Amino acid sequence: MRSRPLPRRSTSGLRHVDVAALYGRGLAECRAGKALSGRTDVMLSTKVGRLLISCASRAQDSGIYVDVPDVRVAFDYSYDGVMRSYEASLKRLGRAVDILYVHDVDASAHGDSTGADARIAELVDGGGWRALIELRAAGDVRAIGAGVNEVRACLRLLEVADPDLFLLAGRLLCSTSRRRTTCCRAV
Image (cartoon, rainbow, N blue to C red; front, side):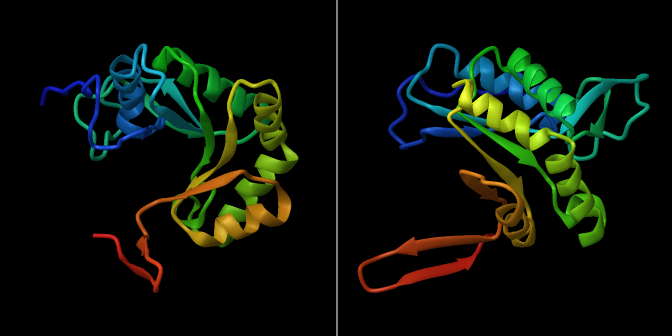
């Protein structure tokens, strides 16, 4: 399947593109970087906490992704892991990032709430969150937060850190009007 570039001038209102090292084992970041080259009108976010490590051909199941590089994915929420993940993403993207999320510090990625709590502790106690704060303070990113699949991880992070925002994947679509707010399950 051939990828199509984003149009230079979008009338759709699209102004935010979110990617991660996990998506396509790095391919999403490479493709987004090319598509957004020179564009300052689109906000870009990516995620840290997973490292892509070279491995033998076909040594790793590619899951839902097709024609991916020969890499395996390893979680690392430590200071060094977050910084290495961020630097690798910048290299693949070829441009600065506006929002940097910690990726999948939740039970769906780590087996259960005990596993999720252990990863959040690694993030906070191991310096990963400090790395995010330093990147924001230096102006390398505009905002920091977490991209997760479960509300529990958001609530836990609010107790132990100071995130700017959360990206909660695929749960609700909400529409607000003057009279009411309507939410429905995402399809």
